Image 1 (cartoon, rainbow, N blue to C red):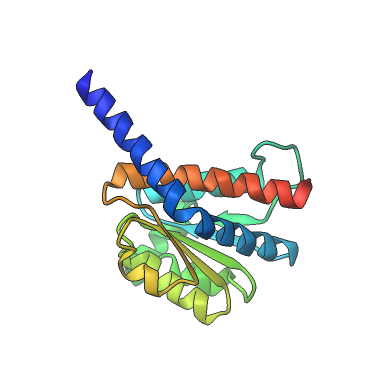
Image 2: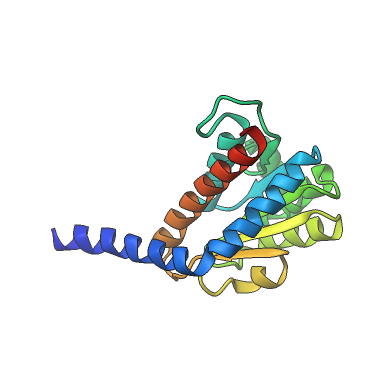
Length: 188
């Protein structure tokens, strides 16, 4: 029982710290994504491991629905096509698997979101660098330090924790808040 309570309490404490420290950054992120969508652009998402799952979940909420039945929103998780990922990893190395997709798809005005609990995932960093060069709005969701990512993105949303599970829990919560704000603004 103590371990269960400790784990749940730790998650609650990190979420409360996030509430105190990151509300403005979440608002700024929502505004950037809303502007991207209003102008007919696309949101691209990427991450590795658990962050890949988070990217796919976020894209699914935007394409499908969050709380409202509404038009689909253009979002693509660069983690979902296994044929593309494995071909790029095989031919160019894993560190280029998102960068090549950014090169193929991303245009100025799009938004590119990189998720990395450490902020140091080479595959995500390379893609964010290229996205920024191409004129996309770059957004990072990461842990407390921000890693190298914090200096490569327009907006860096840092979860105040070094614990991978706590960071991922907050990334999920933030993606849900962002979906809510996007739906509210675009669909009333």
